[in-house]
Amino acid sequence: MRYISTRGNSPSVSAAEAITLGMVPEGGLFLPQEFPSMPPQYGKSYQELAKSIFKLYLTDFTEEEIAAIVGRAYNDNSFPRSVAPLVRAGEMNVLELWHGPTAAFKDMALQILPLFMTASRRKCGDEKELVILVATSGDTGKAALEGFKDVEHIRIICFYPKDGVSALQERQMLTTAGGNTKVIGVKGNFDDCQTAVKGLFADAELKELLAAHGIAFSSANSINWGRLLPQIVYYYHGYAQMVAAGRINAGEPINITVPTGNFGNILAAYYAARMGLPVNKFICASNENNVLTDGIMQGIYCTDRPFCKTTSPSMDILVSSNFERLLYELCEHRGEAVAALMSGLSKDHKYEVPAAVRQDFYGGFADSAQAAAVIKHYYEKHGYLADPHTAVALAVAEAYREQSGDTTPMLVASTANPYKFPVAVCEALGIKCDEGKVMQAAATLSAFTSTDMPKSLSEAAGLPILHDTVIDKADISACVRELLLAE
Ligand SMILES: *Cc1c(COP(=O)(O)O)cnc(C)c1O
Image 1 (cartoon, rainbow, N blue to C red):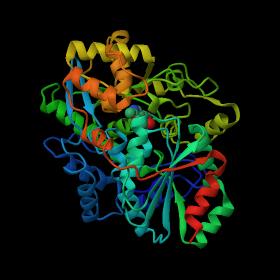
Image 2 (image 1 turned 120 degrees about the vertical axis):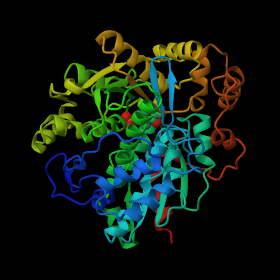
Image 3 (image 1 turned 180 degrees about the horizontal axis):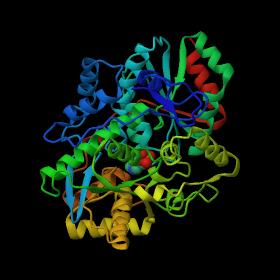
């Protein structure tokens, strides 16, 4: 299998090269030249399913390599209960993607991406030490730290806004062990962190200096093919579980609703369908930052709008990078057409989305109040406790069914454990709690619902703080230079 650029500006590369490079050096994202076919699979373990899908895409990896990587990423240690269980909530089939070490769906990909990267670089003969730079507003940082912790020849440096993440998220990051991890608080907001990290990636002089020391920067964000590929697996797994539970007959089509930010998760569902999973409609659920809703339904993708802070912060995004990969399909594989749309985005902050998007996709949004009402309703009516991101998806899935009359069985991706957002969940349920006291809110939630906080979160409270560096936003570059070039 070869990988090509969404913008038609690069020769094709192998899977290992696509994963090592992360994105197309000239701009653009890698995607497989064609989608292999695979009918729904039944009776397979998550690991077996992952192996059979990876084999089709990672044709430059041996079966032994793939098996070793899958075994290390998805096991009873990292996913003690089950990798991605399906739970019934009223009419909805909820696929829970947060049973990994940090209790958020990012684990599904970040537990395996570092292993793909190490193997890929070995194949490409890349001897440099990799330094993963992450700017995080919360969830990605911890999931990346856990994934990259103690992976050979890789270091990870994670910047977060000192006063811009929840106390629980901060605690999770600051207690990260591993000799190759560094977590740094920044006096500034998330944008300051992100801008500084982007500046470091773009600094040609620094790149040269690091290369002389045998070091290269890399990123763990969701445009890397190695992060998207693992996400295809759980849609096959969810489908098989729906059949096993008698919710559908084998071969029957389903609809899939995904709470969307960077468009990676829902794109993986679309890729599963391109391979042969029977899916009728993809429902893209957004919060108040509803750029995608307008892009899909009105045909204009426009980022010139205010940025809203919501109770579903992992979806507070205006530029959904992975949408570019869907555009490639919508533009009938004409890379120049995608490149033209992307240059429109950087020049005019908008572009026209081809109308073909509405054949397969529907876009809807729910605001924080609607999400809160859904949390309460699902808890009281169905005994299901949803986090605010999953609640956005449930709200939009219901609205879609009502408006369209389409009663195709619905799979809903659930992306976070409700205990990751205990204050918002308590407030939705009408339980009083103190905004600033996250652990207290989690304890209140546990008592009220008679459910347990996940171990990884409760344990973070007792673990020692291992990182205590806080710097000025102006000093990010100097700090990285000092960390990497001091010796
Ligand atoms: C990252 C994230 C999302 C958005 O997923 P994308 O692949 O970026 O669309 C949704 N919910 C949670 C909890 C997340 O962490």
